[in-house]
Length: 476
Image (tube, rainbow, N blue to C red):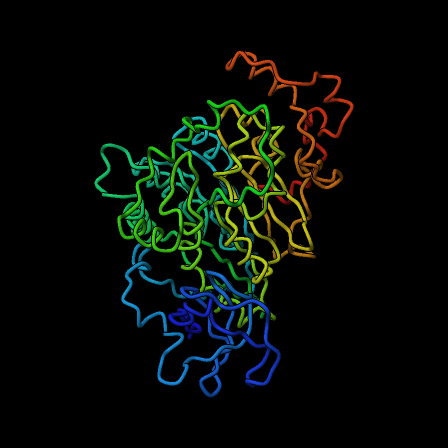
């Protein structure tokens, strides 16, 4: 059973609840209080004292608090609060356990942002899809952005399930776009429709544990959405006002939120509900992340004897995205990542976390955690930023026949740069392609010149060919 969640309902006049390091009231008091409205996960309950882990809100990440002060409740179980928020994403997921035959070879492959609205992308897949075999069990991790067209989404999933023994998917922003012909009133209603489509086609949107020869492999999709507060880096002085308006970011026109979510975000945030050029409320990303909490609790209980591959659509860390001076639109940092997601990954500590969204292929280890994006992207991007994928194929991330079974870190253009170059957000010298685009589109001459760029840290020219930079056994 998943641990209970509690909501802090007392302590408002005192600035929050007193938190101590232990169950005893005489144990050391922490400087930070647990704020009213915070949600915590129960780790242990002992004589009206709660050992908690912070899920959302203000307060220390862990500690002990009292459940009551005299006859007044300070915390109450979350289920006691009548809130249908979780229903916005559909019923809670249960762990699916699959026992594989002992003589089968298990391969887990991944690719994201396949955008099969493009016929070229659909044809790319048809040339590379595996054939089913009784000797091999092929799994595909698909971290979002299939298509905003329900018919294309269904066609794509039918194609993938015909070739892979199992497809595991989580939702991307493009998948949640509403078209004029959509029957759904909002984007989370569409999410629930996509979930039903996946269930019908036996595409997994919940956690799966694969068992083979006494070994366990947990595949864990993490629901997520972005927040503008993920962007902690300074703005570029030369960013034009047209870009700051973010008029080209289609999510602001094609994603529509249900009233219930907007009201809850407004309740949590001082600024009210934000989704547009003014920013995207952090609480939206937190509400998405809260749906993962029971899954994380389940994963943590069996973490010691299990290999974990987690995946999300959005970026967990800003270091996985190039500095703003390299981007033709520096405002993309505000619509790319989730702080709550990264916090969950740090707790989970998967062997690999797979993500998508930015269409910048990267395989990188940061502070001991491996992060991977293997994005196909648009046909135009396949000649440049996603060439490692377009030229070499779907990545096999796990192969039970290999020793070790995890694929080695893959060579990518941005991964190569990130590994050897310290991040320097004080450097605002734009890349030549950015200067050229600004001159053409905005009639704006940016500071610096090509020589200034070449003399400082930069990733250099594109990798001309990936031939010889990867082992074919790790591709489909």
